[in-house]
Length: 323
Image (cartoon, rainbow, N blue to C red; front, top):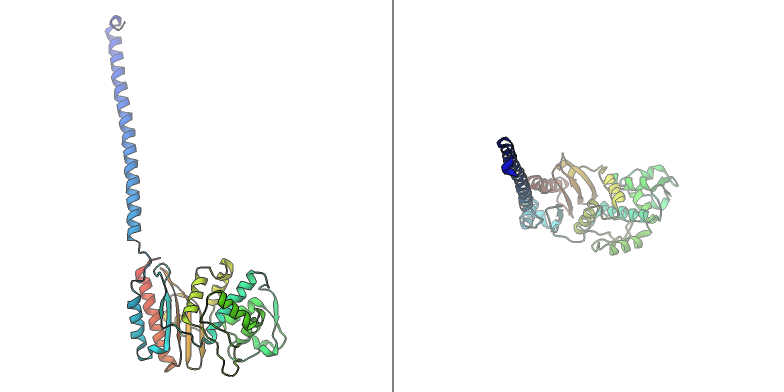
């Protein structure tokens, strides 16, 4: 039949066949190239991710010995009087703990009153808006303005909590200690939460026959880490605690050393003793630090040494950029 066609028709058929073959070949080549390109892109993407993971520094304690040496050199002859806790989220597997031991915590112990109260509030034992009475037996001197409200004034729990941290208000603390169930209730809470170095023996400014409250950089540091990770109570209440800590009015140590950092912290000061500790928020990474001392030589040199340690850690945090 093909032989009966004219030469023009034959030519047309042959051209169509050639064009069809060429077109099919081109389409096959195009999709083959496209598929190969996609495979290469996916492979390159996987390699890039693997490279990024390989370059990312995993948490380790590789510089802990070096940092402990720095702390000892900075403190010099007074080193035995100090204890230090440092934890860098994303960098450290475990905290750096220098000479941990139970010490007089002064107002740092108020952190545990704050944590216990927030736990009670979460469990709906009472609310932030409940009003408590300023009773005569809880009114004491020292820091704070709540005592100035007068006997039998009514103050909301949220105000007492804020003043306890912001002003380190002793009267507010004593009222809250009653609200959380007293010293025994606080000590039960401490045991349940594994704060084994911390113990309440008396209310603020009401020590009896030489009794003393105790805590440690380890217990306080671990509490700050939990608050930082929103694992102390829950997201809402931990954020509220951080909000109070950011309002701390004593700025002699950490805020004076780290001028461009946000510091959520609590201080404590009593005879020949100064403490500071909390969460330091930087642009590139954060860290938790607690520094305590007992029977310091003089306040000025003590603050200088504590600030030098904080600055050193801040420099390392900014340099490493592990977050």
